[in-house]
Length: 326
Figure 1: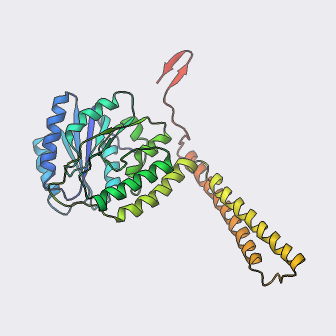
Figure 2: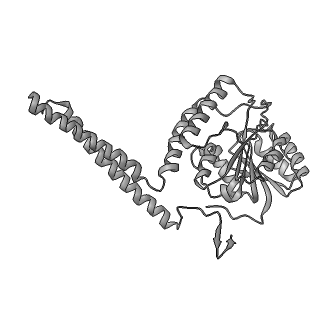
């Protein structure tokens, strides 16, 4: 459930942090420097994702001196997706800008991203074209992941992993994030008809601390990508996926059964010792299970939408009697 916030403002900047005690003060200074020059009402939300160093204490000092800064602290480390979701829920801005807390995203790019958003886009994503990371451990896996995500979701971006993005609140607050799916926000936004753009941004080498990511994240990306593909294609019609698998399995079962019968009649092959007979029975049973799973998923989906009165569509605009209705 989205948190009820106070009066709306122009821009919210959300920054998930984990063990970034040396980075947050200079980052906040750079953000303030850029945002004060824009001349729009803004807030800065730091989400402390269960840091084990002095990050929370440093954030407390900053918030005491700067009333635009708000700090949300988790009881333990829940991960970047949960931290971003908390930021989205508590943000008061009509526009929400997200970036990392390690000083590798350049706050000087924020005005450029906001200008691009004003061209009529719902999401503007940064592209770290000249990335300052380890080539083997970070850049190559990232390129592979970006290619896979674009191929499977149909939303092609050069850099899904760049945290520096700007969102219209009306779009992002309708997207619920789970697991490690923050990197798939542009793909999920496409479900709501979001208009997405990508621009080049600076990427700076890390000065303090260590990266919290490793090669294990690549496997998580692949698993989450399967879930996102299911959400994009079959979230409201799961029977089409499971039913197709079930019918294909049943068809294969009857095909092998027909082949086994043919071998018995024309080749005098013993049916009881023919592995094709066992395979055909297995495929038919598997097909029935797939179809049953699809039917159960259909009931679950319909219960979900009807119990929450959740529509299966999102309306952008309505024209009634020749007039535009909000």
